[in-house]
Image (cartoon, rainbow, N blue to C red; front, side, top):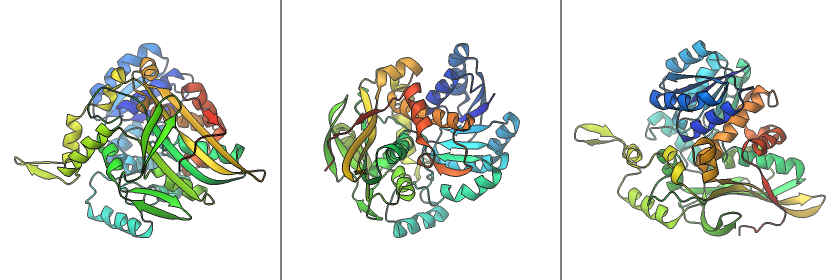
Length: 420
């Protein structure tokens, strides 16, 4: 018997809920909580006839501490799987501490208002001290919750999607089974899907466009190196997808891997983008539509990027029309038994197969399935060290076995083409 709250009801949350309901012997009761209650009710009506999991719904503002605490006090969940906006991570973590509830999210905290003076002080110090400019990081806020989570006797599992998440489990798996020492890690995220729109984002537009437009960064020889956004391009031939242009980005798992595997000499992250996407993004940025600074329009205050989000297709609606595959994984170099070695571990996920199973495209699927698997690890007691942790800090074997079983099987290569 277990009770789980899933916060959010977008594409990722819908996958996580659907996958939990497939394991109704473990996830026996589940509450879908979101500010858009109509989405929660529609998902419940879709899934309830297919599962023994008892599904309930609740309207909450995830940025309202009292509302979140009231839900937890009433429902008494063992775990909350936060699939909503990362703006709300800290509020939900505070509520989990108060109510002694395990916490899982899929992305690092970042603020909704990047001009907030208090947050800006923390951000400016981090840029000065570490050198990367992304609005998200772990060290400034979420890692600082570790002591409180330990004292409460609960687990805070950070970034349990695919990247971050599975990519870190792949690092732990490689370190455990394939290498004595790891020298370099390249994380490659390829979405070879085609949804037919001239411009749309495959996950939340606010987060996606912030991430892509930020300066790039990688970690090498113990320090961060920052470059202009989208200034480093490589072509790579991805299994199941073909040749794609990919660009160096900063991503949150670099920070976490660098902390937990300090002997790795270099960590980079690449993501694929089509030219049409980049052209649209640059134009929107040039005219101010990616700005997070509120402006006054006809007597009302609006945030340009939030207005743009309202105009773009909902990522949760892309599933039916998206075809192709994703390919996400990690390429390693290092040594085993004194010999140089290369290794590539990755997953390919088909958009249409994902849609036929759970009604969502593969980008949501590859994030929602790991979130469910992380909850499974905690509920089964396979991951039980209390405190705030990233995925790579736990035993990767049962997690990767669950991914293999529940929809995201790994592939491996021992002679991969390297990224120059």
